[in-house]
Image (cartoon, rainbow, N blue to C red; front, side, top):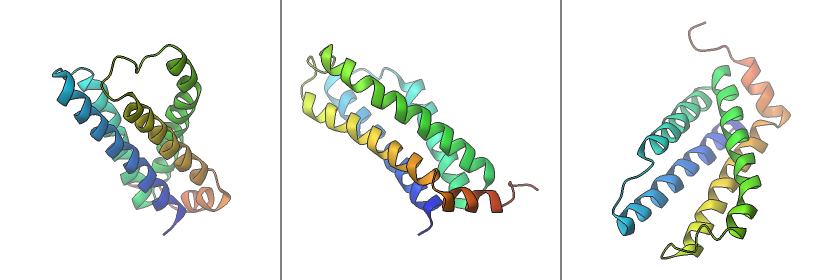
Length: 131
Protein backbone atom coordinates (compact mmCIF):
# COMPACT_ATOMS: atom_id res chain seq x y z
CA UNK A 1 0.00 0.00 0.00
CA UNK A 2 1.47 3.32 -0.97
CA UNK A 3 1.85 6.14 1.50
CA UNK A 4 -0.77 8.19 -0.32
CA UNK A 5 -3.35 5.42 0.00
CA UNK A 6 -2.41 4.83 3.63
CA UNK A 7 -2.91 8.54 4.31
CA UNK A 8 -6.29 8.28 2.54
CA UNK A 9 -7.15 5.41 4.88
CA UNK A 10 -6.35 7.53 7.94
CA UNK A 11 -8.45 10.42 6.64
CA UNK A 12 -11.32 8.00 5.96
CA UNK A 13 -10.86 6.64 9.49
CA UNK A 14 -11.21 10.20 10.78
CA UNK A 15 -14.50 10.48 8.88
CA UNK A 16 -15.79 7.20 10.31
CA UNK A 17 -14.92 8.20 13.87
CA UNK A 18 -16.58 11.55 13.24
CA UNK A 19 -19.83 9.91 12.06
CA UNK A 20 -19.83 7.37 14.89
CA UNK A 21 -19.31 10.07 17.51
CA UNK A 22 -22.02 12.27 15.97
CA UNK A 23 -24.48 9.37 15.85
CA UNK A 24 -23.76 8.55 19.48
CA UNK A 25 -24.21 12.20 20.47
CA UNK A 26 -27.50 12.46 18.56
CA UNK A 27 -28.79 9.23 20.11
CA UNK A 28 -28.60 10.52 23.67
CA UNK A 29 -29.17 14.24 23.13
CA UNK A 30 -31.99 14.06 20.59
CA UNK A 31 -30.73 17.13 18.73
CA UNK A 32 -28.96 17.12 15.40
CA UNK A 33 -26.85 20.23 15.93
CA UNK A 34 -23.79 21.03 13.84
CA UNK A 35 -25.09 19.00 10.91
CA UNK A 36 -23.68 21.51 8.42
CA UNK A 37 -20.21 21.33 9.99
CA UNK A 38 -20.33 17.52 9.95
CA UNK A 39 -21.35 17.55 6.29
CA UNK A 40 -18.54 19.94 5.37
CA UNK A 41 -15.95 17.79 7.13
CA UNK A 42 -17.26 14.61 5.53
CA UNK A 43 -17.22 16.26 2.10
CA UNK A 44 -13.61 17.33 2.73
CA UNK A 45 -12.72 13.80 3.83
CA UNK A 46 -14.28 12.28 0.74
CA UNK A 47 -12.65 14.73 -1.63
CA UNK A 48 -9.22 14.35 -0.01
CA UNK A 49 -9.49 10.55 -0.02
CA UNK A 50 -10.53 10.51 -3.68
CA UNK A 51 -7.66 12.80 -4.63
CA UNK A 52 -5.13 10.71 -2.73
CA UNK A 53 -6.48 7.40 -3.97
CA UNK A 54 -6.26 8.52 -7.59
CA UNK A 55 -2.85 10.07 -6.98
CA UNK A 56 -3.81 13.58 -8.06
CA UNK A 57 -1.52 16.43 -7.10
CA UNK A 58 -4.46 18.52 -5.90
CA UNK A 59 -5.45 15.61 -3.66
CA UNK A 60 -2.09 15.70 -1.91
CA UNK A 61 -2.37 19.45 -1.35
CA UNK A 62 -5.96 19.22 -0.12
CA UNK A 63 -5.20 16.30 2.20
CA UNK A 64 -2.07 17.98 3.57
CA UNK A 65 -3.94 21.20 4.36
CA UNK A 66 -7.02 19.36 5.68
CA UNK A 67 -5.13 16.97 7.94
CA UNK A 68 -2.54 19.54 8.97
CA UNK A 69 -4.95 22.28 10.00
CA UNK A 70 -7.51 20.05 11.72
CA UNK A 71 -4.82 17.88 13.31
CA UNK A 72 -2.94 20.85 14.78
CA UNK A 73 -6.17 22.45 15.99
CA UNK A 74 -7.08 19.16 17.65
CA UNK A 75 -3.72 18.89 19.37
CA UNK A 76 -3.78 22.48 20.57
CA UNK A 77 -7.36 22.39 21.86
CA UNK A 78 -7.46 19.11 23.82
CA UNK A 79 -5.82 20.52 26.98
CA UNK A 80 -8.08 23.62 27.20
CA UNK A 81 -11.14 21.45 26.55
CA UNK A 82 -10.18 19.09 29.35
CA UNK A 83 -9.39 21.97 31.70
CA UNK A 84 -12.77 23.60 31.01
CA UNK A 85 -14.67 20.33 31.66
CA UNK A 86 -16.43 20.52 28.30
CA UNK A 87 -17.10 16.78 28.34
CA UNK A 88 -18.38 16.71 31.94
CA UNK A 89 -22.08 17.10 31.11
CA UNK A 90 -22.06 14.24 28.59
CA UNK A 91 -23.15 10.73 29.61
CA UNK A 92 -19.87 9.03 28.67
CA UNK A 93 -17.10 11.63 28.82
CA UNK A 94 -14.31 9.08 28.41
CA UNK A 95 -15.83 7.92 25.12
CA UNK A 96 -15.86 11.52 23.88
CA UNK A 97 -12.26 12.03 24.95
CA UNK A 98 -11.24 8.79 23.22
CA UNK A 99 -13.03 9.86 20.03
CA UNK A 100 -11.33 13.26 20.18
CA UNK A 101 -7.93 11.65 20.60
CA UNK A 102 -8.80 9.26 17.76
CA UNK A 103 -9.66 12.19 15.48
CA UNK A 104 -6.40 13.91 16.23
CA UNK A 105 -4.29 10.78 15.94
CA UNK A 106 -5.79 9.76 12.58
CA UNK A 107 -5.25 13.23 11.12
CA UNK A 108 -1.76 13.47 12.59
CA UNK A 109 -0.81 10.10 11.10
CA UNK A 110 -2.16 11.15 7.70
CA UNK A 111 -0.22 14.42 7.85
CA UNK A 112 3.04 12.70 8.83
CA UNK A 113 2.61 10.19 5.99
CA UNK A 114 1.93 12.97 3.50
CA UNK A 115 5.07 14.85 4.55
CA UNK A 116 7.42 11.92 3.90
CA UNK A 117 9.69 12.39 0.88
CA UNK A 118 8.24 9.29 -0.81
CA UNK A 119 4.68 10.61 -0.59
CA UNK A 120 5.67 14.08 -1.81
CA UNK A 121 7.57 12.52 -4.69
CA UNK A 122 4.63 10.27 -5.59
CA UNK A 123 2.24 13.22 -5.55
CA UNK A 124 4.51 15.48 -7.60
CA UNK A 125 5.24 12.78 -10.21
CA UNK A 126 1.57 12.52 -11.11
CA UNK A 127 -0.29 15.07 -13.16
CA UNK A 128 -3.39 16.80 -11.87
CA UNK A 129 -6.69 15.35 -13.02
CA UNK A 130 -7.67 16.84 -16.36
CA UNK A 131 -4.16 17.68 -17.55
